[in-house]
Length: 291
Ligand SMILES: O=C(O)CCC(=O)C(=O)O
Ligand SMILES: [Fe+2]
Image (cartoon, rainbow, N blue to C red; front, side):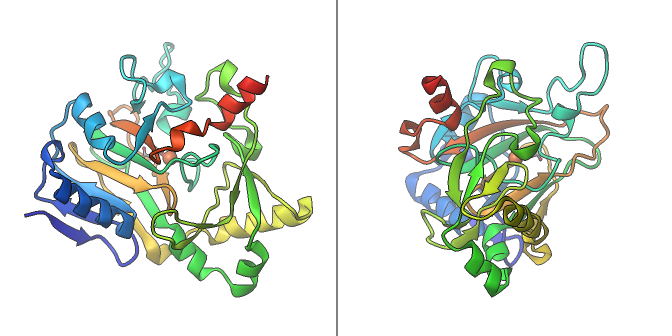
């Protein structure tokens, strides 16, 4: 019998006694509901081939290859290989691969016209220490904002692009580095739960629209300070066979980026879009069509 165990008061739940390869619709509906309620779902002990992982992931939405072509699986473009090939041919550690996701708290896909719904990882190899992933609730972040700040943000759009103000694009091929901004409300209603979240990403936001550049900078600094509520976090310690999915519309995450570099830490990773969202081209596709 499928069990749902919360991993904290605000975020995270563990599902046990299931095999994701053989879930009927009723069991999947329970899992899906638990995911919406807890934002991050952990399932241990899964024994999967790539096709199993893709088939299970497709129950959540549409899989789209990540813009970083160099880190895609050669035969399965929807699969990103996290942590693979982290040493360059001359033996130096490639920090963009080793520290992927560790530069700061973020949400995946804010650079797309319709932000990614979810990201799902399957743990293939885990180091002897370090390499955790941390999660935090965007709902709790919004709830904790001072009322005056909530009012200043109400109705404001953020302009977002891959790489943000620092134009971080080390994982992208040369031809994929030109991104046009997309716009999302900073105070955003989750499309399925209706709950209000702080939708913000310091590494992808360019500016807040409709205020002076100075005020935009001040707001970005203030939101960067306030986006993480320490009591609304979950820290995942990986074991091989874990399947973890997070909701990018209501959670932030951060890779600890601290494991022994000589050890393997490999995950299969998929980006999941809302059903029907594929018709909305990504900002980069729009840009290249215009060009
Ligand atoms: O490797 C991790 O722990 C997470 C990396 C990350 O940010 C991502 O896959 O989106
Ligand atoms: Fe990420």
